[in-house]
Amino acid sequence: MCTFSSTSFISRLLVALTLPQILSAVPAWGGAENPIAELEQHELEQAALACQSRSYKELFTTMIRSAAVRKKYAAPQIDYEERGKKNETRKSAIPKESYDKFPIQMFDFFWKTTVPAKPGDKEEYVMMEFNQGQSNQISVEWTRVHYRGPYVGEENLGTAYDLDGKPYRPGRRVDGKLLLYPTKDCWELVADIRYLR
Image (cartoon, rainbow, N blue to C red; front, top):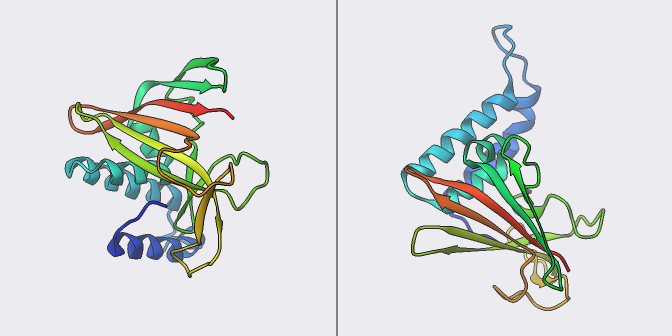
């Protein structure tokens, strides 16, 4: 599970608590405001702040939350790869306007996969590891996990186990990798690699 500051947690909690009111609110002046567009604009602003502070983790967090951020901070085409058990590899280049395979989403302040390995598995979560290369390239390795007790409240679901049933350890088993390369003033998503099992 990705850890974050209490300030970040509180701001996300406020967004989660107020989003239903924002989405159902009637504009005070009778205008045709778009709460979704406003939320996306807020995420774009957060992404710009992350770039200014050179925080790739915060940028990636906004990518998880916002399709608009993913589109803005993406290379003109995303190199998509599926790597099988026997070293077979399928590659394709997806224009950023068509890229809809981003594998991670946020749900109740936890990371989850957008498409679980087993259809309908609502208990599949994601662990992420960030690695920064010498040339400022960022690799985000993600692993599918299930949690087993004891459940310790809102911020701790228990002990993470990967889909092989073994306790999660960083780098032991990876389901995918997202690569972000530096640009003049930030990073952009350039590759999405999946390890098929």
